[in-house]
Length: 329
Image 1 (tube, rainbow, N blue to C red):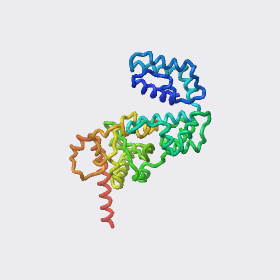
Image 2: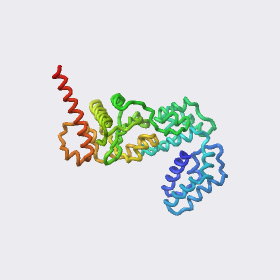
Image 3: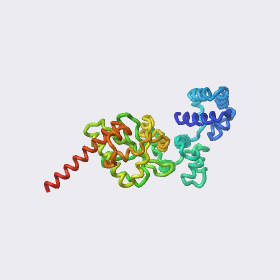
Image 4: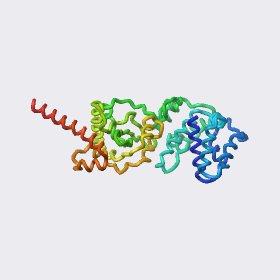
């Protein structure tokens, strides 16, 4: 039900914003449910009640109220789609379209061509007919779009973009392939910042690493080691593909959490800004840029400086241990 509510509310909001009256064709014309009946008064009732309102705010409020009415949403749930696959794929298309950086809105035709099908009919048949696709077909679609396969097949409690990557914190970070574009989403926080690493596979597909990286000083002994692992990973990126360190975006906490859980499309990260801190990861891994502590504190905050000092302690200890080892030899 949540899928359908989201799909319909987004469609109706976009139409309301145009200022035109809603029509059956505009709202329901792209649904192919075999059980849909044009003479069913529930569709006309839905459109009429929204059109009856005088301004955009009240139209949207009425649409929300109607879509939360059990009788209406239950009918739509039963009649608008012939397969669960079609409903889930439409939801994925909706989520992708939240990324406004695309030059055009993604639709079924675009997805069909992107997937390499000879025509959109290879997808549309699951909208027109009451026939679910084979699991191998669904897995192929999920793989090419970066969608969780189990979610697209079964609609389980897993979220659509939930990561399935498995790795241990320190060892796993150093095994990440840096040849692809990496994106760094930093959780906005005054004290406990974290970094979520997102790999861009192609224009539509992303891989989100399941665990955020420690990027703050409010840690115990284990957290200090993890912060140092973050430093070593960023140093690796700096050496192998430092251009990636430019792709820094500060995202609100709720969006950051949604990215971890797989609730939202990873590409929406580019909708946020670097908050004039594009060089934050460079300044974290470099020790010889010459900036004063006051400069770094003014630019990034005292917490950044405190985290950087933890790294200096680790590097100093490593240097001392190496010197002791050489002297002993």
